[in-house]
Image (cartoon, chains in turn yellow, brown):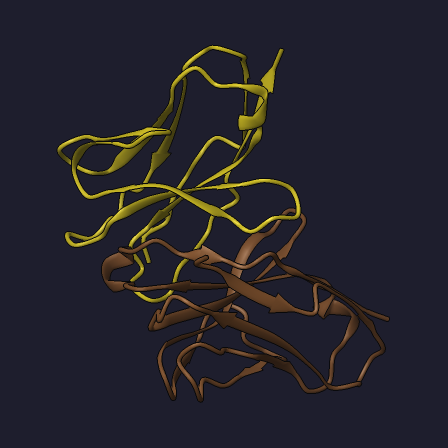
Length: 108
Length: 115
């Protein structure tokens, strides 16, 4: 099973760009990389998904190097409302494995 | 509105009293899944289903049962709940799952307390 490693926590200030890196050394050739956001007592919410290079949507960017052994979620100009836990998921087919995630705290 | 619904949202019960948590999605998704979330342990998958009548165990299936008789519904059954099943439960659905692709839509959660 592909295992992911993320920082347990990060702090940032409002207006800054935040980059959260996820390591997934055992990623399989066909695996996708997906990031979710979770607020306390709510279900996770899909942020972005990618396979290689760079993916951008209205809320985030996902950078994936050529070897695909890591990925970086980039949140531009964070606000207080971005304080949440961010999960990186890799492949696993139908058996999704969430790691402990990264607890992001955005400070005023 | 596309959504996953769960009922009940909160439940307090006693050890050994059978209970069912319902999950329903209105997006015609083939894939559905149940997770439990406990402090310090993150989200752990209990069971998943790739289509009607097709279910399989996740990482923590002990003490749980599921069924998928209709595409939209995926109930979670605890036949003899125990205190260690006190947790926050989430149901999710997705149109695809191959190689981890697809976006999972999560329900609002069910907070279960077993005394």
